[in-house]
Length: 377
Image 1 (tube, rainbow, N blue to C red):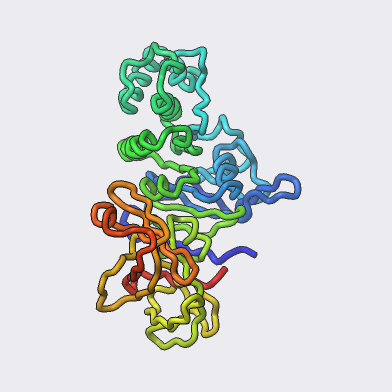
Image 2 (cartoon, rainbow, N blue to C red):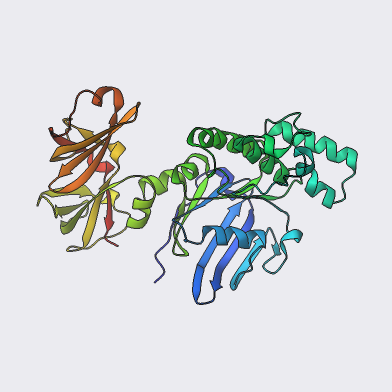
């Protein structure tokens, strides 16, 4: 059954930009397996658009169909006004960066970057200038004569990016390009990718399983699950207003407390928590859709929105016992047992580091409006 898709309405004046990439009810089947099922999106001019989801959700297959490496079983793909559903990859105005970079080890950096230009018949003098310009843009000036094997992983990634960009495509596709880098380098490259994308204004579609990557770089995000669209919207809304429990669980850490709606008014829902029997009142605004009395729900709260031993004039409080503390420097993840259910609190590392110990009894608090009320999947 196809889930109800929640889509954020555009709020910025930039959002009346034309659609550069349009997918219309795309389906991709491999034998009896449906890898992509009814995906429809419009990616706007200059937009950084990410596709996220767990392994096997269809995100890379979707990207490969846009690139032309796979053809849809059903549905249409448009680049601007042209239907390219059956057009081969080499005839599409697209640049792509692969997870493994796919550099030619027997060619120099300059030859790798110039490869597409040479195939297009660009004169040598112009090729050399464009290669030098793009290498400067990706912060690798003067590396034309080096061999890719002499470069670090991050530098090889920049070479692959330069090779994709030097042909001046209308669309840039990136398939988990940072997954082979260590954590610190990945974080540095996020800033670099976004800087370059902003500077060029190129329409970019980015595939990743790393939600943090997508949240930090994207204008909008599509969440896929089992080949189907779960939600599409801006990072803030997907994080704070997930359309269903799958999205809430997939995008960042979250605490989900099961319960049942026992009553409702025009302004609020009253939920009885399964674990404690407590009844809590929540404003209707924390639910993304209309819910009925007796509905099974989860009261969700992000660890960063939770606090310990804080007196709130209006909020929710639960009693628990600290099970473990994971000190991360600037923050500390504190795992708490609340009536047999694990509850994660992200606290300030400086204040929480020496204040709490496993076994301590604590009160978990959060503001009512920080709750996310979702019907059980």
